[in-house]
Image 1 (tube, rainbow, N blue to C red):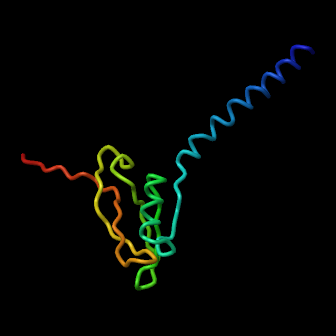
Image 2: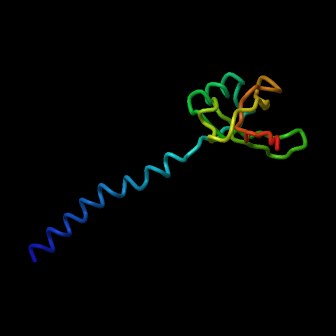
Image 3: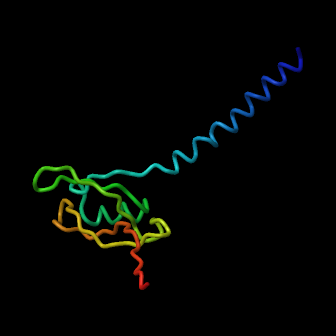
Amino acid sequence: MHVSRMTGRTLIGLCAVVVPLTVLPVEALAINRYTSTSMTCSGVTAALNRDGAAILRYTSKSGALLYDRYVKNRNFCQPDETTQRAYIPSSDLPACPVYRCKQIEFLDYR
């Protein structure tokens, strides 16, 4: 009986260590979301500089909700992607310059 108590305590201790480790990858994948039209352009830039990447959403002139993932620089893209300049509306500018990731297109000269 003493062994089963020790095993139970060990199991509880092990769960206390393992469970937080399994949560970390999910938190690492979290990405902040912002409505660009409720921020100034400098606020959008500051958010991207702070977060590295974010989902920025806004309503188009036709009323459709548009969104995309925007990044601080190429370090926040996949290895086969580069950055492309894009423009989104902010509260103070109709075209705030930002970057988004774009697949690198390789030319085939065969």
